[in-house]
Amino acid sequence: MAVLVPLLFLLDVLAMFWFDLKGGNATALVGGTALVILLLSVLLAYKGKGLEQATDCLIKGFQFGFKVFGPVIPIAAFFYMGDSGFTQVFGEVLPAGSQGIVNDLGIALANTIPLNKEVAAVTLTTVGVITGLDGSGFSGITLAGSVAGLFAHALGTGIATLTALGQIAAIWVGGGTIIPWALIPAAAICNVSPFELARRNLLPVVIGLVATTIVAMFLM
Image 1 (cartoon, rainbow, N blue to C red):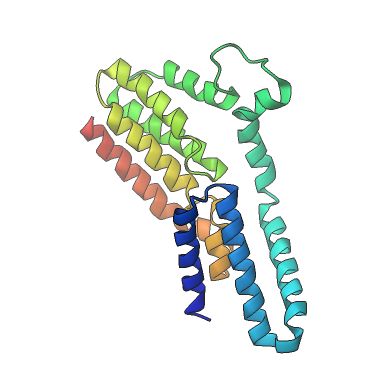
Image 2: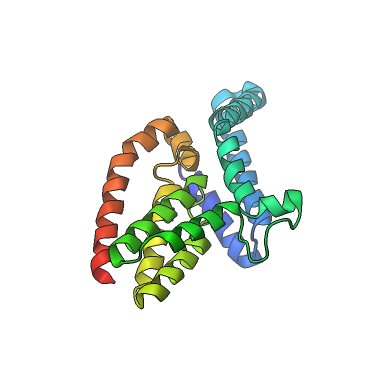
């Protein structure tokens, strides 16, 4: 079984390329493969009671997911409503050119801070960290690029460095390091608490962000 699991997922990857599966279709393929692996595992382990145990495993999995994602819902809703979700719910009520309440606040902050290389680097890191709080790691890249463009235009240099800095900060924070709801898959596989994992990752990630921000100041 230990050899069969990676083989099945390798076949999934090949099928995605061969049949050009993307988005929901690719997710369904991986999810179905995981379900097949679960059924095979419990049938081998529990024999006649395998199907009953499979049901119990599914229930426990859903319970774990709801338990861990409970705190995520209001936080994710805040960022969703601060971005494109606001206009989808309330209609086109924001001023022309608005990119969403949260994004507009970030751009306004970038326009009011005195500009120099040090402030620009620190601000891009902060923007990346804030946008990474939704646990995606990539949803804030557009905002980070916009703010980097504003600063680079004012400074006359550094657009590539600032953009990369904002992207790194967003990915390091939201891409599966210090945001618990981004750590759920790895934490579940390793049978550890995602909150404990995030706590242990906090110090090295902060040190990395500080060091990267300082290096960016010299690169601009």
